[in-house]
Length: 136
Image (tube, rainbow, N blue to C red):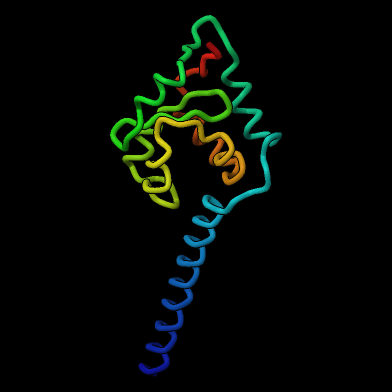
C-alpha cells in the first residue's frame, strides 16, 4: 500500500512539473518567436493610433536619440517614433536578454523590430513612447 501511494505521488509530481515547464516554455516562445511581417497588424495600428500627433507631442532629432546609446540610457527609433527602453532593458525583460537590445541603443531599429517582433511586443513598446522623430 505504501509503495502504491509513493508511486502515485511521484507520478503526480512528474505530471505537475511537466505541465509547469511546458507552460513556461510555450509562454517564452510566444514572446520571442518571430512573426510574419506585421506592418499592418492591429497591434501596430493600435500603437500608431494611440500616438497621433498633437500639439503636446515631443519631437526629437536623430542625433539627439543617438546620444542615448548605452544600457543605462537606451532610446530606440521604431517607425518614426522614439522610445526610451532603459527601464525595460535594465529589468532584463526581453526574452533574448538585454544583450539583444543594447547594441541598438540610440539607433533606428524599425526594420529589425517590424520583422521579428510579435503583436505583444508592439503593445509593450507602446509603454515606452517618448515622442516622434523630427523630419528636420
